[in-house]
Image (cartoon, rainbow, N blue to C red; front, top):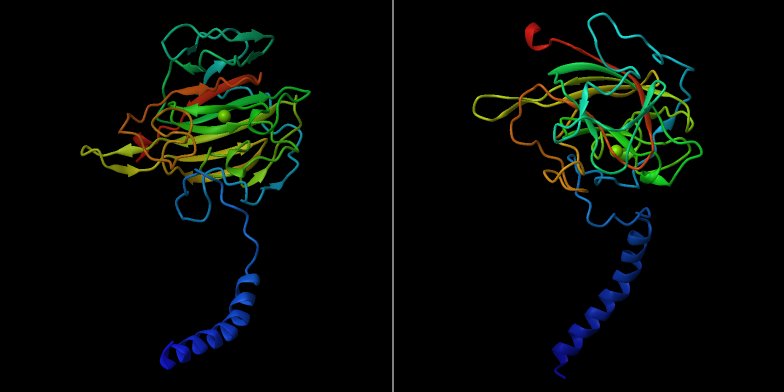
Length: 285
Ligand code: MG
């Protein structure tokens, strides 16, 4: 071996002797990072992945006893369900809604699609009460899962999140896959809970360009869990436009008038006292 090469090898070994002790602490001082969930798209902002279980759990807040529970509809509201039939609801094929009703509630059916309103509203205030099975059935996302779907595109999650941890952007009160609730204000399974939802529809201009994102505010049992949250698009997993675990995106332009749908997961969850009132924002712009 030429002397020059021997010298180079000695230099490399020496460099390695010095380099190793320096390099190792730099690596071992790094905080432990949980493995990234496989196959999950990154949410805008690049901090968390869709349905990232590493995201901090929302703080638990015990809500007040009733808030808007049992609230009678205001005079300008349209009552969507008060226990007296499902005439305001239909299937996705326009057929009469056939979920089971009893007393003042309607119960989800696990197959055959959700039920959606026959009416549509551009920007609205929605009151709805819901409860999940007691004792709980299933775990995680299988525990009392349903949802308030808007136009079959945007979901406010319904789930039994009482002492049941799941990925934060999939808990009760989440804009599914986009925005965890600010706090976890869940009541125990079997108890009636309230959502008061303010929704502003997205708007497109005549060229098909998005000029206003959808915005939602949600009070869960009287506690603000979404505060004018701007949706980054349709929520994942509702339809093929935004597949499960994928990055949200807006659908092609749609009219601002949208329908409300109750999601058809196994539950069985119950809903009651549903009313809606238009905010008439367009007329006041
Ligand atoms: Mg759901």
